[in-house]
Amino acid sequence: MNSMWVFGYGSLMWEPGFAFAERALARLDGWHRSFCMRSIHHRGTPDHPGLVLALDAEEGASCNGVAYSVAPDRAEATLTYLRERELISSAYLEKTLPLALHDGRRVAAVTYVIDPDHVQYCGGLALEEQAGIIATARGGRGPNTEYLWNTADHLHELGIADADLDWLASRVRALTDGTPR
Image (cartoon, rainbow, N blue to C red; front, side, top):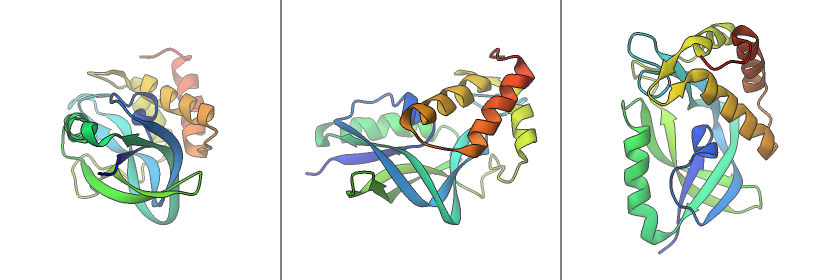
């Protein structure tokens, strides 16, 4: 039996929460990383939603992130964990999508993408509006600012460029004096 692969493009990059056998940089084509999901649990509340990253489909786009290989004997437990974490409000859809690993291998990976028909979908928000929301939201897993800054920092550590995230991280730091709210 082959390993199961999981693609991380947001918090799974810096806090996977599951045991993995291998970690590799990877690219997913046809999708882009975007703060297009209102968070009502982890980084916001129903009364004051935050924003979290999701993969939004876009022709010609690509998203760089991290692929994790999970040993066959850990696959079921890992899927259970991921479904409890990622499918908390059904705004994400679980898909198995083709990835290109940076070493040239091609794998199919469990990937969580936004459901554009879900009420929490908010694609197309202006960056300034995103910054204002992220600067003030807080949920069960902490401030929305922490999520943004951790993701931006880990993208930098991995050598992955994301101009929108860089702009947002800088703008939110300016709005909050760099203090998580």
